[in-house]
Image (cartoon, rainbow, N blue to C red; front, side):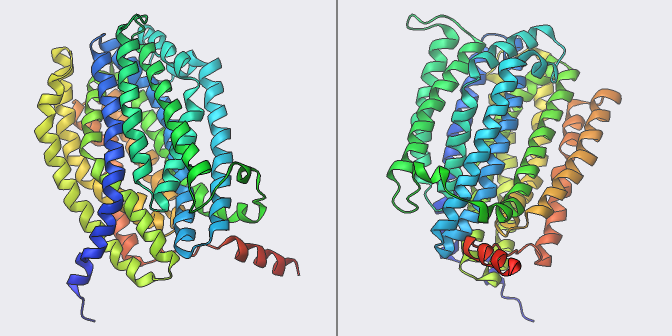
Length: 467
């Protein structure tokens, strides 16, 4: 059979849809990274201990953040499909189940940092100074979980129905709120007390309040397409529970294991030393800056895949999958180049010891290699394959490669063999390379395209089964 290469390269309409979704999502990610960058730069002025403690404390918060991403992305696999078929009732039920789980997770993390802050910090480091500073951060951040959870999951749902500009505008506003209050409370400006690391947490919580009110408020009071309202939080969703868990929970498990894996990586780094942790905090910012288009395009690919499948066009989805994989390769190479170009000036922004600077330079080279593979598997795992409903396969891949390969290899590289920073990070991120190859074979198989049942069909099947 003759292959039409032009079809696989994509047309004008395809790229228009991708960039319509990817650019606002990427800009929103860039704004979030900008906040994190300013936080690290400001805290960097107060010393490496506070910078490192903030980085480690945020690793626990990132677990919650990733779990919320999993909840939101799991729901979006369904909401984008239902949006494509215009099944609003099923869409609302998916969102309601997402919110209920989000509330339970937020309360669990709030209790952990409220009652056991020292225990949480000891998971990451034995350094008493970093533990004390991290506990201070947790005390002020405690209210932030519920705010973060509802604003983040709502943002993902809005993206899944093509509304990407509203979250972007809110993020721009929250960015300036965060920067202002961080400056005020970290350094004690305009008559406020100098709180340093605690001030960074307080500034973040204040910005989360604004973000939650605007994003969640828009969705439940203003939006006229889905028309989700407060009373929908209490709607009967029993007929959707089984389908929601079948499709969405593997995404939650996969992303949670990813978050725990990243947290385990931080535990390894915390035991290597404060210099390694501080250097990695700088490196993470550069990694995030250079990968915003990766995340934006991955989100766009999931939305486009789900919407196209909702319209019943399976062949088009398969072709688009190859196009997205090619985009991942191109974007990954561009991102690697950006890292190499900005690494030196970024390291220069921080007040670091010479030892920390040397480690940071090695880590920059390592991530410039890793990101080429990460871009490809992000567009497939977090985008195309997930949008196709292949969530169980992806969960298995994350468990297998992260926990069986990357983390054990990282432990040996960092704590047993005492390799250089470059090889430690390569070992800790080796799963990105393996998954990039693994997912290409899955894409070719076509087995990743799964059917998702509407609420009405689920209910009908249950009634027929009882009959």
